[in-house]
Length: 372
Image (cartoon, rainbow, N blue to C red; front, side):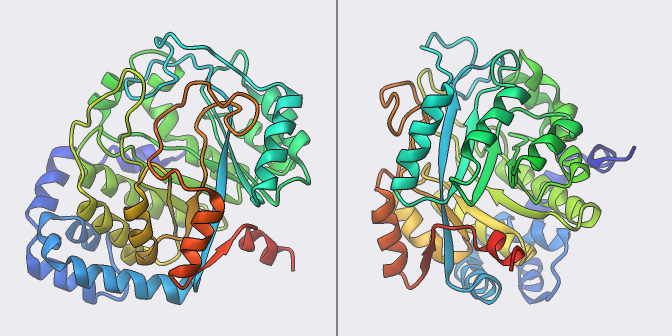
């Protein structure tokens, strides 16, 4: 059975880096003028040479986003169900080696969190857990979906990679979207950051979107954790992965996130720092490369950055996020997975969106249209 691995193995990290760094200003201009940008154009748009064209890139990205998505910005909230984890990951507060209080929400606590989140106005929730197969596995996820059925218009998940048949079971229970980030596509550095646990299997994680596509998921999310390796090369692989998936599983919709490494207890300094200007460049490069993909911006970023970047290509934003199990109502003091930066309330975020000439959407408009 073919998978993205077959395509991925044809590429060299070193050669890609040389190609991207060798792009000229003429290559950037050509990419901006190409009505159907290629992967080679994407290389130009994320290259150092493109920094001189940031205003042009941003204006084009804003125009393309308005044409495709109008003035809507979808809002969602992450609901952390558990911080138990069997993996060792150098960048995560939930890592197995961290001496923290572990917590997995009980059914009654899941309902309590859901009630609080719906009172905030959200109709779109993202369920998040650590990767602990002995406690938060398929049966736990099935129970959570059953409990939340009817409370939210859209339930997404960001949990450990599962088998194709397990995804099918969850989809039948109403699972709408799954987010699974490769973290980094650099195999050697991936090993350094994931020395123990199921997550240490690079190719098993790489094949997860294929299993999701075969299972018939409505939407899946891709991305790399910016800071673990060279963001330009990792971002190219995300674009390559996206193009492959769209051609292979054309009925599925796609979203991309671009989380920058944030502090946590025990912290890891980024190997490669990314400036705000570079993150704007990346957001806009994705939009110009692919006018259909949704782009999501989390509360990892600052108020000021989110206020400005929102207008340049983003289609969804988290708000009022709590990155600890039970953080909204059950156990606000439990350890966070990482520190958030934008601490405004959901209502404040909605007001900011309106003040910028956009409409905050609490309900999943895409799902609603599919049921017309």
